[in-house]
Amino acid sequence: MTDGPENGARAPSGRIVAILSSLMAFASISTDLYLPALPTLVHALGGSQGSVELTLSGFLVGFSIGQLFWGPISDRYGRRRPILAGLLLFMIGSVGCALAGSVGQLIVWRVVQAAGACAGPVLGRAIARDLYGRDRSAQLLSTLMLVMGIAPLLGPLIGGQILGFGSWRLIFWFLVAVGAAVAGAVLLLPETLPVERRSTAPLGTVIGNYAVMVRSPRIMGYAVASGFYYAGIYAYLAGTPFAYISYYHVPASAYGLLFGVGIVGQMLLAVLNTFFVMRLGSDRMLSWGAMLVAFSGVWTGVASWSGVGGLPGLVVPLFFFISANGLFTANAVAGALAVEPEQAGATSAFVGAIQFGSGVFGSAVVGWLADGTPRPMGLVIAIVGLGSLLATMFTIRRNEAAGNRFGASG
Image (tube, rainbow, N blue to C red; front, side):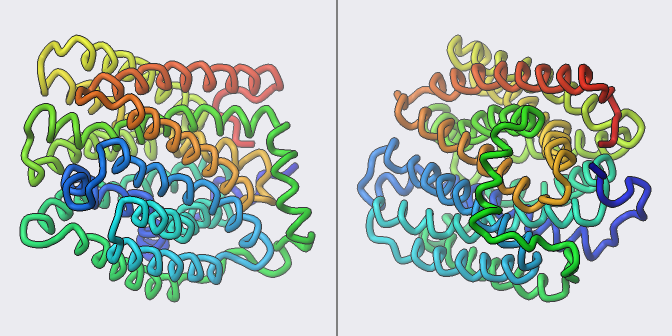
């Protein structure tokens, strides 16, 4: 099977990068912006720490399942219209969150919000694959991660400032405005999936192809490897507000600074990936990212249980764990998309569903085991870090056995 567009295609324009970055950032802006408000929500809505953390898990449920819908829809009807429909649903969900009167209501509206938000990242990845081959698309995805790193870097800072002069509800009204602005930008985006390349199979048949993907060792290998890592990322997102703010008494307004350190590391490694992926291949860069994930994950587990070094002792390994995203995720997604490039939307949705479904598990376990310490978070991150490395090595060795050496483009 062909790899689709050539790896040597011209570099993407600044407008394409800017619009795709805004779409890819929807998971970050929808979670990171309200992270400083999690301890506040315990008192404002009368919930427990565990129930409030379920607002994050609920978002991930909607984000995971929603992708399975948007991917096949976009393969059949193009990318632009489904993105706009998703943004409208995101804005409706954000209004519901702003008006929620209980933790239960907030969880429900977070699911709705996520079902719309997920159209952005899943179709942003598909657009990258529409335009470029495997290694070039991995390079573009790294560039997008670099640019969109601004969102999680600024999100907690903005959220903390909003809390400083207003209610947590203002955070969700702000997200409504963000959704409207991105929808206006998408209207400037050209359709990247021409009619002649769209799927003509009935939607039921296309959705049934997910069963075929489950039986594909290559797609599943990349998806499971990245799924383990996402479980750790969302354990981090669920656990650090309480570990930093409640346990180590970091002011909510300063939480974003600690959060942003890891994002800066992620952006630096994304730059490294954009320079070397075309020379060394995405599988080799992926393997290096996986080793960093496992090492920093185990280090985080040890630090959280021993307490050695206090707050700095926990922040440092978490910095390396989050930084690894710059090497890891773009290459894992590019590897999966290269298997079935003619079904980029569905494959992107499938991989994304596994990633964020794993995130549900990671954040939920941290909530269930919550004991007022960083230990549950550290335990989850250590275990999934090792799982990510094992899945990555298994997938790469399987590729080598099939004749796909490091650096292969297909």
